[in-house]
Amino acid sequence: MTTTRTLGRSGIGVSAIGMGCWAIGGPLWGDDGQPYGWGEVDDDESIRTVHRALDLGVTLFDTASNYGAGHSERVLGRALAGRRDEVVIATKFGNRSEEATRLATGTDASPAYAVESLEGSLRRLGTDHVDLYQLHLNDLPVPAALDLVDTLEGLVAQGKIRAYGWSTDNPASARAFAEAGAHCSAIQHDQSVLKDNAAMFAVCAELDQASLNRGPLAMGLLTGRYQGSTAALGGDDVRGKAPEWLAWFTDGRPTPQWAARVAEVRQALTADGRTLAQGALGWLLARSDRTLPIPGCRTVAQAEENFATLALGPLPADAFAEVERLLADLRPAGVGS
Image (cartoon, one colour):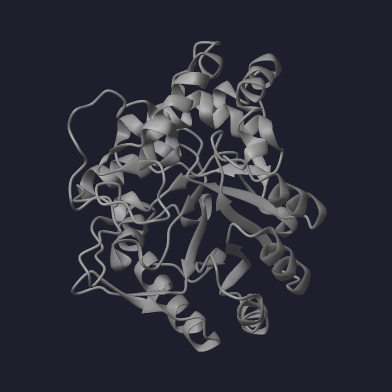
């Protein structure tokens, strides 16, 4: 079973599934009380989770400067101490936050802040370089993104980053950035069995970009753990008070229309004995040879379930075809497209 893939034109080898580190950052708040984190976390358990991921073959870890206002990077740095050469670290810039107050304080797309943010990330991670440095502003106008390319190329030349990319769901934005940047190697985008972005895969294939899949488990919806539950997620969890862009949960519970679609594909995703989460990750591995799902984990048990998919591999062709048949009537209408 092939358990590694290549990070686009960088040529960097990574595990076919990475660990998303948003949740281990703990709380982050907007000035209006909007939560942007996943609630309180146990740092020791987070470190055990990273170590278990490593044991299971994971070499790609994706974080951001603002996850927990830098706390995610600090915890990841502690967990990877002494093992830096074994892993590929991806982080992001563009969202400002205050470590002391754990408040989100706006955005900054300036080249100067790209440099400043990187220095902070390197300090928190305890490393002298980041393997993949990603612009974290989904809807930034293309001209502003292109203004960053010279600075990012300079950081590559200095050895402070090995490659860079953009976390955006807009294929035209991704295309412009990848065409302009010689060391642009990855596009991170929202991608799951419920929400396919075929146009982005076409861009990645044409311009030799890796497809980092954020939200591969629809922020927990595709684990099945929340279906049928009468308890709502807490008010310090981004899903408990979902912002407009988060469609999977409403008032801390699965959004009924999306929960119904999960139920519709559950049997096909689990037909060969996988769990629902493993089926959803296997679907992504089967979707393209460029996909790199990065499911979030904050417990050892979650790591063990998610990263067992590395051994299981892509969803079998017949199961993949059945999922596509079940969802075919939804995608032409724009649902999940």
